[in-house]
Length: 224
Image (cartoon, rainbow, N blue to C red):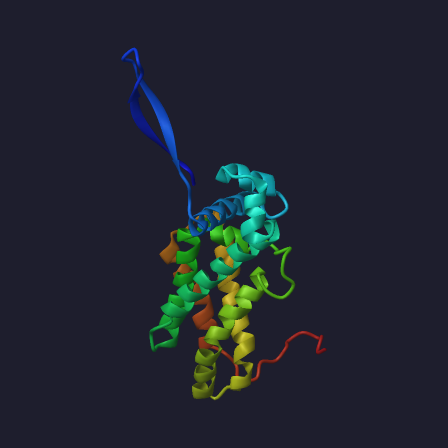
């Protein structure tokens, strides 16, 4: 961002005047500024509701500057989404440190809720449907990526309990999806407290796993 720095001077009649000196951003600084501005606007208005003109105006630059750095609104949006996805994935995978499966569930739930609490704008962007990418950059693909991280953990647990470890991916998707969708709801209501939300999520997931049937059967008439 261009900063205005005041410099005192004196006129011929003794009156003090003020002029300004402008400090220009480096290319890297400008890029980061545009990303911050875009992130805020995309979270507030979504992709379709945000224009290049608005991004440029908020950053105090002309439209060509946005195109120069990102090629347009789509390019800026794609970088914002990619950064948020990597941040959330890093938080989840970094949290999975315990050895006991139940504590791992707690850590995963807390990691997602921590991200929502600290990076609310980023999560709002991720839960919107991405108009830019077909197979990446969507909330569904993010959930799939996180679930992949816990497949191995569930696979080992299944094997130890005598269940088919090949079903671990299915259960990983189900568990992560449950936590993520609950987190999406909690994003707006923020009740109850984070720790209580995590406790209830783990309660449902763990006691469901604890009473898991090796070969579940349908009790209704439909079998297909």
